[in-house]
Image (cartoon, rainbow, N blue to C red; front, top):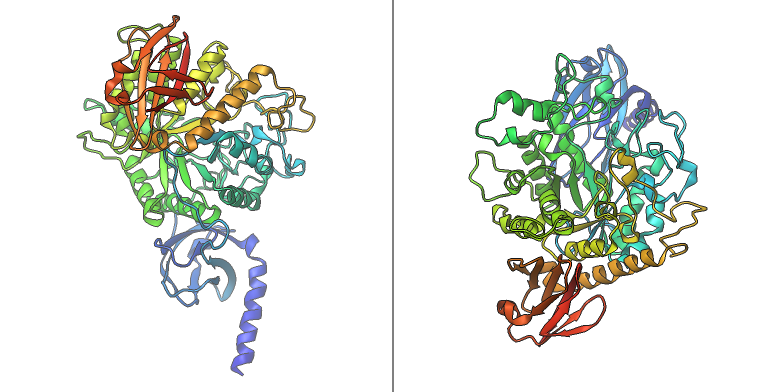
Length: 617
């Protein structure tokens, strides 16, 4: 009799599970056994107003309900569950009961990743070289997903910079060997979450579903495949995380769980984009509030991270993403506009679960002290950030850019680069900052230096030899160009060879000019040398005061000494080892790691050139 009753219950539950997709949605969509974060707050969205009054029941070994909280919107409830260490993988059946009627819902409790892809959450460090790309603009590997029926944005036109172009994750997978040969160790893509906005969906920053991967780039299955293919090659994956805002078509904005799920204003109020009110000792509270609570744009509502339900929702999604897709590192968008105490909580939750996990945040500010405030630092300030590193706009805007573009002066030109790096004493570890020459928000380096290829080479040589974690923007290796103004789409053009019929193909070299091939080879040679250089990837940095446009610095450890000579002058410069005796004592020559040419302890470097020399005794 008992056996028949059990079979009847199982059959009934199976039937109710069939209709679940139309009845309620659970966020997170699943969890795992053996996690440190074992108290999960499930946001449940039901199909009718009053759903939040239903009784909830779970009968699964090792899983118990701690609390059920009806939220202000009658379609939502928060379900707090605890997963015991003894719990086994399986489908947790959650029953929703009201007026004698019930619905059974599956919530998968999964085993943690095993086999291929278990090496994940490894973090990124100064031994890595990151390649930043936009999936929609890199390569179209699967034309069947170019458009997805039912989605708001049906554009597909490569001749329009703000339409979708069809690039996808399969396109990235197809060219991982190209990236590895180039010397890349890590791939960072602009956001891959589903972006069901009516327009401008190519960049991904206004996503509409935390728990869905954009179907037009291949969906969750393809994202997981990309992760596995990277790890199979000994490479890594960085996910672009956006906590500050969502797209205006996000379900939690269209049908808000609570009135304060988002920051509400009497009328539209955008952020001031000013970071100073957050640390200015003389700042007004209203200015600080606008910085953090103001919306990024009208189409990107500002999330209220001080709401504890919102905070749990975001933190759990971060952990879920790492576990689900084997993410190694986290780039955090618009870091300075987030609630900073919340960010400390979120960062800690990730490193508690994944001790090697690393994070760097977008800190588009002005001044090294301002940037250092938002990361782990040595500054005596009331708020102490636990963010490991920043996207180093200071090393870019007040460092390498003036070094390449300005004439030498007491505080100008390459002296600005020297001065900016001298301020590294403010950071706990400046090596954790991500350095770059350009990205998806900036004028491309070739255009920024007026088309001067030698200046681009100097920039790349600096990028691949100075301290920090270098990031190369897609296409820089083949001299892609583009001005940010008047349209940022011009710096997000298609990678040559990523589409059928492209007459120029950077993957094969077909159609590339001699200059483009030369730059590609230059990057390949230097990047692959860097991989095996203990001095560059793990050693110390010593820089000397620039003189008349000549800037010399060293990367060194017990095994190796690399001498980096940057001549920003318009004249040839004579260089003698004896002037840098602290680092050159005992060495007699240096081999140019790109050209292979050996120079003696006294040599001349041409104007507007940079050489990277491995010293020999």
